[in-house]
Length: 236
Image (cartoon, rainbow, N blue to C red):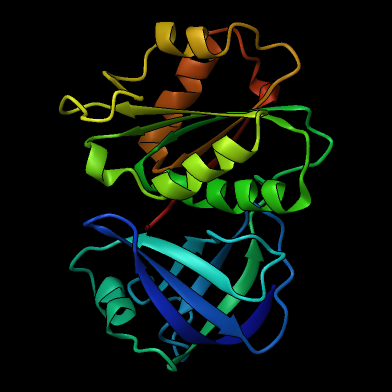
């Protein structure tokens, strides 16, 4: 793991509660799609969990910049992050995590809720840039339609890549977009989107309770433990 310095380029509103922060690092950051970094706001106290937190890359490693995406809260970390202005410097450690994309995988299923989409964006952008032929199905659940982060990017990639299928699930209110599915992630819904699980690799990212629930759901449609790769967002 290496310490990097980067300069804030841009802040992008993804939803009413989610923002992306795009940085230009002083040197190229070597990471694999799906990995994460540790943003350091208190370098004098490396164990300060309030101000030094882990965030997934939400950009491809092929880009000159790096990007992280965060659901904004009133926490000290979020307030420091949101106080940054373009041109401000930050420090971060990278790269971390083993739940990553592999070009050898022929079929990939992403079972994702809410902010768990961030590492998936890194993977999908990389796949688009490399024009890979991987079969990918993304099942992406959010409470409301307005909380679907990166929807425009996902729709663009889906239009450009016939091997990419994206299903939006909205749980708390009837969506306006008829392409969205109203309801909750269930065994029946997953079985419909993944009629065969043989030869598939499944990725699940998010808070620990959600990851465990989605893992059990994926196993309920016949996926073996070895087919399921997970990353829990601790202290997010």
